[in-house]
Amino acid sequence: MEDDKIVDLFLSRDEQAITETSKKYGKRLRRIASDILCDNEAAEECENDAYLKTWNLIPPHEPRTYLFAFVGRIIRHCALDICKANRRQKRYAVYSELTQEMQECIPAPNSTEAEMDRLCLKELLETFLDSCSEEQQRVFVRRYWYFESVESIAKRYGMTQSKVKTVLFRMRKKLKENLKNGGYSL
Image 1: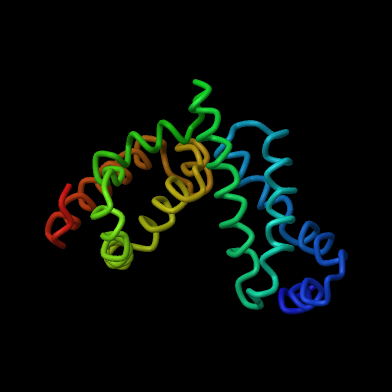
Image 2: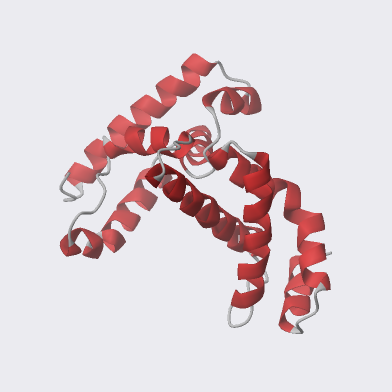
């Protein structure tokens, strides 16, 4: 079923919308949560939470042309919330490792000013990714948005793990430099 028809089901409050979303995107959504949490049961719980949040967000939103991205963002945030809760309880996931990698480039905001810089940072990140090759963009997004392992990325794109690590290292270094040049203080 097409995304716009699924959104119409959500808008008409038809529970079939959740079934259709699950049929079309369930496996991919669980994969996002599973890659972040490294726990299939928690990933299924995130998936259910994401469907409920999607149900509550449509309407007012109508993601007719970007339903997967809409629900994918929701499930990603659900998984990250579980990671944060686990981190408070000293149960670390891949999230902690990746956060540490990116802290070299982008420190966590610790003041109101840092939060105000969010829009500037977003623009700098988009400009940075636009300046990268398509392969670099894919590797970067797979690692830092989808939390995919280096091994999985290497397999997906027919690269060695060493090459993936090198690409990521160089991109983090270039990102840090671009952020400094863009006036973003690190």
